[in-house]
Each structure stands twice: as structure tokens, then as C-alpha cells.
Amino acid sequence: MRVLIVILAVAAALISCEEKTAVPQEWQFDKTIALDGINPIGIALDGNDIFLSDGDHNRVVKVSETGDILIEIDGFERPMHIDFGAANFQITDKVTTSILKERALFVPEYGRDSIAVMRDNKRDYLIINDSLDAPAAISVYENEIAIADFYNNRILYNNGKQWMSIGTEGKELGQLYYPTDVQITEDKIYVADAYNHRGQVFDKTGNGLALIGTNQNMNATTGIFVTKTEVYLTDFENGRILVFDMNYELKQILETSIDKPTDVFVNDKTLYITNYRKGELVKYSLKEITNEKS
Amino acid sequence: MKQITIILSIIVGLLTFTTTYAQTKKDRDQYEIQVDGLGCPFCAYGLEKKFKEFKGIKDIAIDIETGDFSFTYPAKQPLTMETVLAQVVKSGYTPNDSKITRYDGSIETNEKSEEIALQDVTSARLYVNGMCGMCKARIEKVTTAITGVASAVWDVDTKMLSVKYDPNKTSESAIEKAAAQVGHDTKGTRATDEAYDNLHACCKYKRAQ
Image (cartoon, rainbow over all chains, first blue to last red; front, side):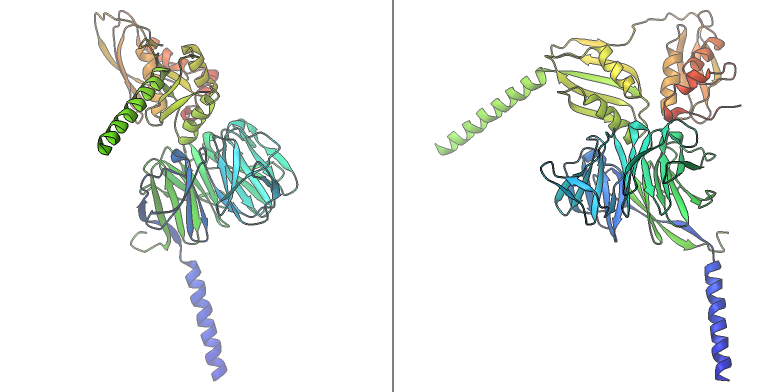
């Protein structure tokens, strides 16, 4: 009898689990956080700490969930899409050269054609034996780095061993037109191909694999974020975030309270969007779709 | 006595600062350019970056919404209007109305002074394809520049150009042709692929097949 009860309980638990995973979810608007005097371009999280690049004011700030500035790091020249990582790269403070072996904040400086590397209050610069022209974004993944090289219409990518240039100017698959954001994943490189108004996927040898959102009438795709199950694109001029599945099919369009978005970041069941012009951080939450809505 | 000395020191300090500031301003020319194609901060910072190639540039201000771009530059090494406009083009954008106020108060512009005496004004609404505020600025600029056109206002949502013109001096087809020449398809005239390709990336609207 006891065995039967246990079996029944396990079966009930399994059924309940299955039912739970089957409930569809969607992103729902949560709140808008006003950022006093900040015009955010890029966002990166270090744990739950929110860091924003403030291009208009040449600084990177750490803000609280209510938008208060907790830390301010200034002296950048137009900092753009930032990222945290621990890539093993050569850095210099202009006097000494060393190898970076710890987690750091990487800040592409659009106006200085360089990548600043911040650890606590120490600022170094990534050594790159190639000339950048307005780096708009950086992505750090294990020992790999990718930089969106805006005016050169390419992604400068290091696979941990060597640098390579990905993409040429143009509108075909494999070509870019003013890329503004990039993200490396386990086996691919995703690009916000801003003025081709689309996302684009490359393999790690530089071959173009897919275009994302070409039929969505985006206007200036300035930011991209990729999770294991979704690709998020910012549609700057139209004030939207477009969510795609990993077959690059459109899943959801977010519009509420979004105005001139430049970047997006997903942290578990929370999604943050930077509203550049209004100086806001918009928060969405992943919630089950209720019956009333459908 | 001490107080008087302090007050006098402050006055002298302020006078010195004001004089120096005035001299600094006096030694610089003021440049104001209305730029077509600045859609986002990446574009605005890009324009700024390209102009920083002019060593000595200061007081750079860019309004992304309006496209108003201004800066000052040492009067000792003045930039010509042609140089400034060429640099805007080199940066990937299109210069519209531009003004240079030289340190001595003289003003230079790139506008043509033209007075149109319109005899008989008629109205029309023409379809012109485009997609953004920058398209609007371009379409209105090129069509109002036509001799005989009194006004032209383009609506980004309806894609319709409301135009008032003197039929003795121009025609609807001439207005459509002017829009097409800068890359915008109209009902009667399709822009060449070259003109379309020359549009700023922000302005590449979806063309009818």
C-alpha cells in the first residue's frame, strides 16, 4: 500500500511539473525607472548590479533599482555598449603592458577608438593591432572578444588566439552597414546590423548564417541581446523591442513605454531596456499569459 | 580694510575673467549647420568624431532631433564653408542650411537669396515615399527650392506632400521629379537605384516593386 501511495505521489508530481512547463509565458511591462541626468546607451549587469554607459555625459554609472547613481566612472569619450568578462588579453595603462586575468568591465570608447578595461578604479586599454573607427560595442565570452567597428562596417573578433575581421560593407548576407552591437555565444556571433535594419548571425569563422527581422520594418536596429532561447533586437526609431525564437521567428513585440531604445538586457525573468532620449530604464517581467488576455 | 581688499580682489578677478572670456569668444568663429541624417546617438557622436579631426574645435553641440550642429573654431585658422560642408558629407550625412559667424561679426551662409513673385497659386497633394524625419527634411528642402513652389509639407505617416505652387512656373511632374532625384519614389516618377542607394541608411524606405 505504501509503495502504491509513493508511486501515485511521484506520478502526480510529474504530471504537475509537465503542466507547469506547458504554461505559455510572455514579457509584460513592469515599470519605468527615471534616470536623472543619464542618457543611457548600453547596459550590462554584474550579478544584480546595473551598469549603464552614459554617452552624452562621457561616463559609466552604476545605478540602483530606483535609478539613483551609486557609482560614477567618468573620463570616457562617448562610451557605448559595455560588457563584463574575464578574457585573457593584453592590456596597457600606457606605461606598462600586462595580461588581464580577472573579471573586468569593458568600455568601448567611440570617440577615442579604443576599449577601456576597468577593474575597480584602475583603467587600462585593450591592445589591438588593428585600427578601430568608432567602436560601438564589445562582447566578451570566455576567452573571446568581439567589437562592433561602426565606421569600418565590420566585427573585429578574437577567438582567443587571433584577430579576424568579420563582414564587409553592404546589405547581403555576411555584409554589414554600421553595426552598433554584438554578442558572442557558445557557437555563434550575433550582430545588431543597425542601418541594414536587422540582426545578423555569423559563425565563428566569419560566415554569415542568417538574417533576423528583415520583414519587420525595423528602423535602426541599435541593440541586441541573446539568451539560450531568444534573440532580442531594439528597433530604435519605432520604439520597439522585437523578440525572436532561435529559429529567428518573431515571438513577441514589446512597445509599452519604450522610446528610442538603444540596448536590452535579460537577467533571468527580468528584462531591462534603455530609453536613450528620455533617460529611462524600462523593466519588463516574464509572466504566464493569463486567460483574460487570450 | 581687510574687507575692502577682499572685495577689490574679487572685482579685479571678475574683470580679468570676463575680459579673458570675452577675448576667448572673440577669437573664435561660430559654425552652425543643419544636418540631415542624424537619427541616433551613434550618428551624432560619429559626426562629432569626424569634426574632431579639426584640431582646435570646441563647444560642439548636436541636437539629434533637429539635426542642429554647432561648434567654434579659432579665427586665426578659419574653416571655409566648403570645407565644413565637405566634412559633413565625409561623415556620411547631408548638410542643409549652414551659417558661419566670424569673430568680427560678419556672417556667411550657404543659402541662395531668392524672391519668388507668385502670380497664381494652386494646391496639390502628391505621394512621395519615405520613412522618417530626415526624409521629411530632404523632401521639403528639395521641393521648396523649385522656382514657383510657395510651400511644401510632407507627412511621414500618409507619405503625402502638400504643395502650393504657381502652375505658370512649375508643375506637379517637376515637383515629383525633384523628389525622385534625391532618392524618393513618387507615384509618377521612380528614383534611380543610384539615387535611392545614396540615401542615408536611416532613410532607406521599402520600395514598391
